[in-house]
Length: 178
Image (cartoon, rainbow, N blue to C red; front, side, top):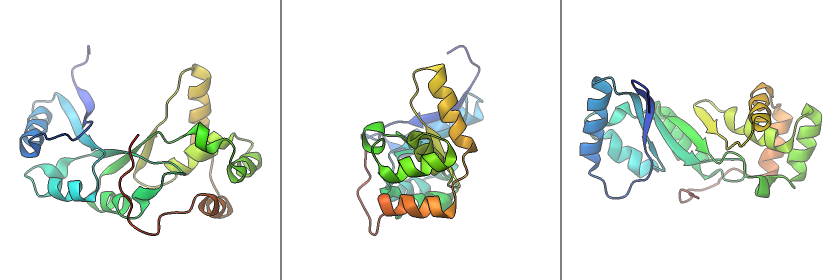
């Protein structure tokens, strides 16, 4: 990789690993200066509970999960649990153009902000404390468009309209993955 350390090393999928050994190894890598932080991906509340019971398990820095305006299941319990534990949520697929481009609420909000509906959707994801997004991009222009979403400040009215168009969860849902 031609680097002296990795800033964030993720367990991308949980598939039968020896979690105590993995957490111990992450700790050793941090101590050795090979990685600065470590995280997990697609851990639900039960997984975070299990992780927190392990020696060193509370050092987890991030949980990468599917999260966007149309996939809000984590808001019911996972996002609050992550915040309580000081774990950042890394939203993968924070923009799903096929699900969002035709949405009238996002289009109307975008007009008010002189933005695109996808910028509004991204601004909505990153507005929340403890949430970062990793949007896909394939060109410098798209990088600039995504970056411009960071400057959008959604109003209470904007948030209410998004909540009507994409209601938050009223009960626990299975962790979505794509």
